[in-house]
Image 1 (cartoon, rainbow, N blue to C red):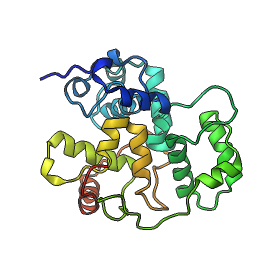
Image 2 (tube, rainbow, N blue to C red):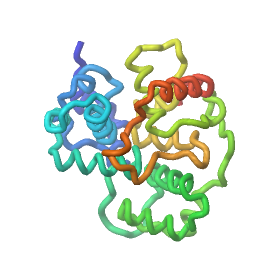
Image 3 (spheres, rainbow, N blue to C red):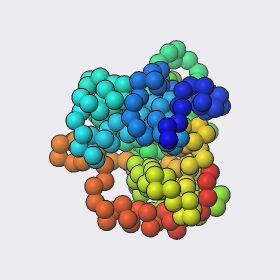
Length: 255
């Protein structure tokens, strides 16, 4: 049965959250992929999720680029840009860069998630270098002291409500793939729904910020990967099963 995913069917609070994160899809009506038409987990309003699923159809399901791009409402150049952004920065790269005045701005969830990933990859990076990268990535000028105040000391074995300690072997993409698999399997008894509430209520950008806090230092989305020599998504069923087993132990509820 199809579900009407017109703008009027997406809660106003979620639409506002998507606007604030810069991930409100300006052309949701152009998304004709079956999952986005039939399953409420997949929201055509969420630009980051739409981009990821578009890349997934090509990379993981071996569908032709032209057809997939058209089905998701994108051109081939837009597809290749999203592919490059994902290869460099993982899921965070699918959040559009911010434009506008370079004055004072809030440290938004997507900026903090971006900072978390930089610090995970380069633990000794200086705050001034992070500020520079934020400006390059988002077009936002952040004061060094403001960033230092916003960054809490690293926490080990962080517990998130009833989800348990931090998973040790999963990137953001692997987390999303596992959550996606359980949603599609309708496995309500599994209890493996980490971040599902955040994703459904506020979109993928908010979900990234929530789940990034569960990933310990040293784990991150792969960077600078060639889409030819190294696949964008985990292909090994063994890796996926291990990821599911780890998350099954640490996730015991929805955030």
